[in-house]
Amino acid sequence: MTRPTNFPRLFAIVALPALLLAGCGSLFGPSAPPPACPDARVVANLDRVTQYRPGEGRDLTDVLFEARIGDLAGECVYDDDALRVAITIPIQIARGPANQERVVRLEYFSAIQAPDGAVVAKRVFPVEVTFEGNQSRALFTDALEQRIPLADLKQGPAYRVLLGFQLSEAQVQENMRRTRR
Image (cartoon, rainbow, N blue to C red; front, side):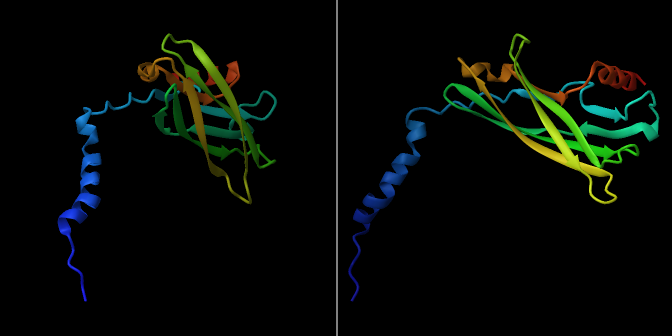
């Protein structure tokens, strides 16, 4: 025996509240989209490094390793009083002929640049990659999250996240010479 269903009553109990909730955004006006994410970029001439063995030699046989930061991928989320930026950093590493240890150690940095150009925070991250067997290339990928406190969330897009290798002055000069060629 089946009972007759009171469809109007069932509709009022189940569907009507859902329809009302779905329309809430339009009752109070459209919600504003969050501000754009800040620019995240690799600093020119800090995107690559060639490390030589100790001494004066600077030809191919003296190379311990070469590394390059690839294309960044990221996203951001605005909280009540801060901006969280998540960035994926790919580092391509090639072991050189002088690297008999089969280990590469390097450092990269992440810095936050305020709208006025001042660097308000900087962190340095160590990277160590071990090459197995006859492996000569590796891809190291790091995931980084930066939190930027903001008094005004609208200022978020005016900040920048700067990344690069932590290099000596001589390494920066070498990169600049290579860029000019």
